Length: 217
Length: 298
Image (tube, rainbow over all chains, first blue to last red; front, side, top):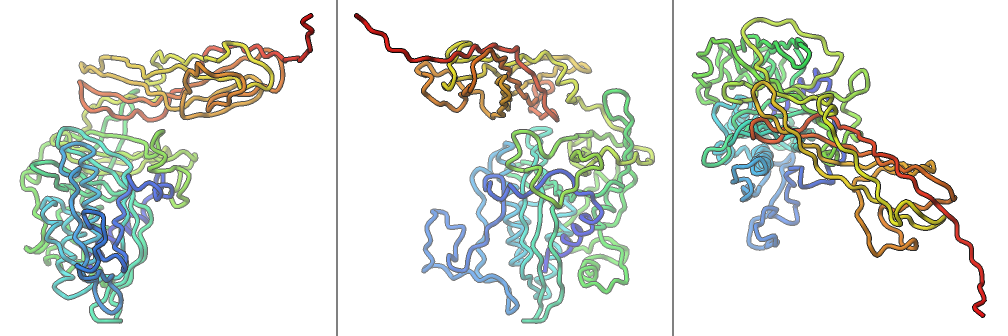
């Protein structure tokens, strides 16, 4: 559904780039540096439970999207306190939260929260993430699969309240549906690709730019 | 993807004046943020197109609003260039350099660096891409200049008088065959100050690895220097001890790898690519053997 254009962006970028540098493999074991937005498992129902307990009885059960219908009761990511601090590590925590929101938007087409933390001057945020989600919502389209995983590889603060964070990201393949069992689009995985977030702090962080590493001209 | 490419069809030409990259120009960015419609019949393209006006601009209900202030500027753009390694020492856990077969090394097998083009006016990132030594210089239009950004190269970093670690041993310069000789290296962060282009630049060298050569054909690479162990005896194995199998005199050398960081006029610390390797003075170990004998006391 929604992030399809993003995927499209990334796919072509991935083809044209000599994908540089290093890799994700070992990062999987380093949760501190990886924002992988663990989706709630079907059994737990509430991944984002703030006290760490699993009170599954009280809350409606999470159901991931499948060919029969969109995801249900997807927990809204909660911004951690660290992500509210105006520091490079605060910016990193914020980007991890933002990645959780990207995955949340992919699952739900609900862009209310991500809009609060995205600058309207961020082109790529709008045309790759937010606009397609809004559009998918309008036409009742949903996505199955297509989970993004971002690993932070570099954090640079050119000035106070302005941090540039480079990530490597991948995504799993996904399909889109408008009616049960009727595949509308089919998209392959995204190979490791560089994505650069610029975040600025003004009474809270916002993403002001998102660049997917392009090829040399 | 077109979007990104359309936005920053950036040509890069790097003129090496001996120290820094200097000339970069940006082609005028394409106005359109939307796809040019192509008769692909591909649904994603169709939907993307549905989000665009006929002229290729985004529809009014797009979340995106272009930044008029930026658009109006026709002045030559000033940009900064920032290069960095994606797999630098101390960062392997985050981005292991050997673990992903999908990432291609450069033709000479070195790993590409990442280069960021940053607008000097407001420190916003314009472009981010990987660079290999074999990449051609790109032909460029006018209008954009690189402002000199103070960088410290690996070569400059290595040229600072970095102090070697000192080899310490217990017992001092003496051991017994088959005993656990405890070694440790003394080393600390080191600081330097230089003036570059009227800016005060601080440099710090941080030891990250110690490579021991025990002089008997054995080497070891450790991520810690070890520490004094006052209670140590030759029966006690330690994290940094070594056993000599033979007697004799052995020259022990510890080579320290430093990574570097620099800060301009009190600004944030930034990594210097690469490392500096500094060997110590050799320290001679005299290894003896023991012989048990019964001695009558009367």
